Amino acid sequence: MKRSGMFGTAAVVAAVVLPLGLIAQETKPKPAGTETPKGERANPLTSGTYKVDPVHSSNVFRIKHLNVANFYGRFNEVEGTFVLDETDPAKCSFDVRLKTASIDTHNEDRDKDLRSEKFFDAEKNPQIAFKSTGVTRSADNQLAVTGDLTLHGVTKSIAVKVELTGAGPGMRGEFRAGFETTFTVRRSEFGMTALLNGLSDDVQITVSVEGVKQ
Image (cartoon, rainbow, N blue to C red; front, side, top):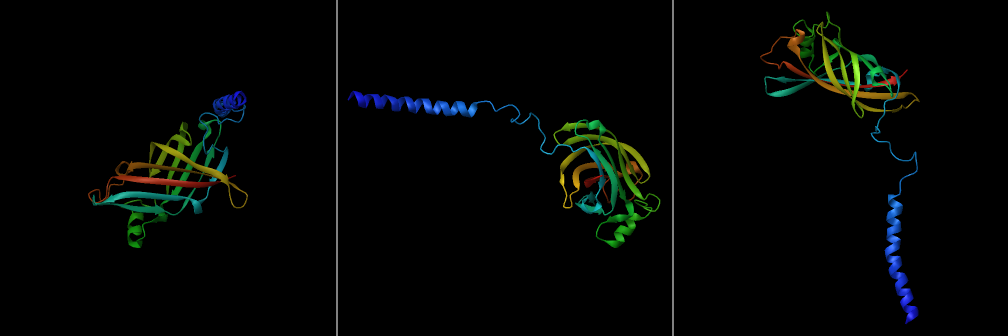
């Protein structure tokens, strides 16, 4: 009976001590250098200068027609460069240009009208351009960017939020990085006042760019 009691006591002790040991092991601090740094970004900035890849970039605008439904169009031709800096966001910069004549709304007659003097006046204003003047980090993978937007021959300073959408190797060993921004402008502020009774003054623009590191 005494021997049996000893085994019974040992079993109780093991039932209590072993779980406590497992808990202690799980809560033990990780060795230095293995923990995830506080505020680590999922897609950290990759320093370098990038040339815009027009094949893998998209530039879309949205405007409301007759205050009924949103209508979408795009610009098929884009060029430019951007600079990313891992350690100092102030050294980042963005220089993106859309070819006005490349506007595409899936209707030839409408595209011709939009290229005319009534709207974009593409012959006189061949580009829509944005060039940054200041960059700060607002959150992980996000930048607050100020810059000059030139549209319809008028240049105005605007502020946009830029999301760094990713970075990594391409199919041919090149290194790529991408960003996207969506912002709204009032076309009347850039001298585009035609058909304000039929087309909204506010135009939402989304620029999604992929670039190749130079």
